[in-house]
Image (cartoon, rainbow, N blue to C red):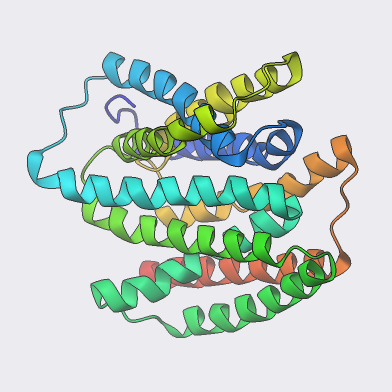
Length: 292
């Protein structure tokens, strides 16, 4: 979160490593959400509260300037979108299979493409239209497996979570000269505030397994990962970060299967492969077009 230093190659390598480690930490969310026997709002708010402590500490130790007053509305809007992403993703993980939740959320780049078209007048290119068709086919496969398991609500919430994540990336374009960590801090404040009433409505059971899982999610899976992402995204292109982050939806259901035995349906695996392939395809083609 400090200033950007080093040669261009060193900055790229540091950024790539940071986003890769961030993606691995993010991929553990499905597992630990499954392990915590609390109301989803408590999980989302509890881990955001712990993440705030990590991010505030790092923010205070950095030499980053304060947020300009003109950027506060953009910061608040982006933070709200990211908070909705986290809250809806946690709820979806409790209602449907982790594979369904992460793969449907991973449609975010496609939603970002459409929202940028309507809000920023950035017309999609041909590769984006092909990716949209592929994502549509992948969503059909994922939903067909989810419907068979009676998890339609969870699948829908995961899809809306992806929409919110895509909206967040569009709003972040308006804050491109600022510190991405500020957006994450704002999002975690919003999430923690949203969940506060639920701590009184559904008092949590503070047993060892729940406490350990929450500490890991708050400090490492969200807190440290947010700091790593904020560090990495300022050193590599967004397209490259998106490609590296593709490891998250691949690893997420693997951790869940190894620990809990939750096996995704074949239709979900097939749909997930199509969705990930669509995102990787559009990102690679877009990056090549920019270079040319």
